[in-house]
Image (cartoon, rainbow, N blue to C red; front, top):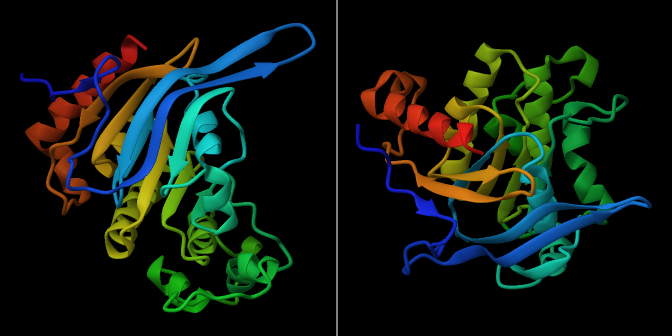
Length: 272
């Protein structure tokens, strides 16, 4: 088998020169300090992410996947290094509401309906709308919840609640979507269905998407590239291109190309 041609930690992590960049990082370090010791969560991370790219992040627990997403979202400041999001500091991108974030827990307000939960970011921002932005109702239809706008969280399945969380992250019309294991707690069938739905939404909206997962198959199915991180400290192991057709259904997982890619990712993961 010929493994994918990967970008290794000593190589430049560029994207094709004709593509604009959404995210650019150089030598990012993140250290956490306690009274007794300091822990390096990320060390020397350099990465370029193209505008509109779907990048999946894969690695063992403690390798800094979620920490990196929080650096991009300006929820954590790097201890060292430089990062730009949409050509500016992450703080500016956050203040412009250019970043949407979906966590593993949908965290919906139980006293609000689906459409009211989706509307929440607009209310927090004073109801300011961007020209041409999809409405909360349109976003719920986009994620497959047409007719469930008035349902409360306790009336929805876990998969439906995560769909609402995705619509809520999109309502501010972000240019970058960050997803931290959003389907990790769901059953396999629901997870597979949402993987297909997410790829459809991504293609329709053209969002730069960073998706954290522990699943090799999810990383391979969703991503255009897979950022593989090693642990202790978190650092880039390889960046693996996904040379699969852009129009994908779950059937592609039975193809020789997918099986070989998943096997390669597993071998790299075992060295992380």
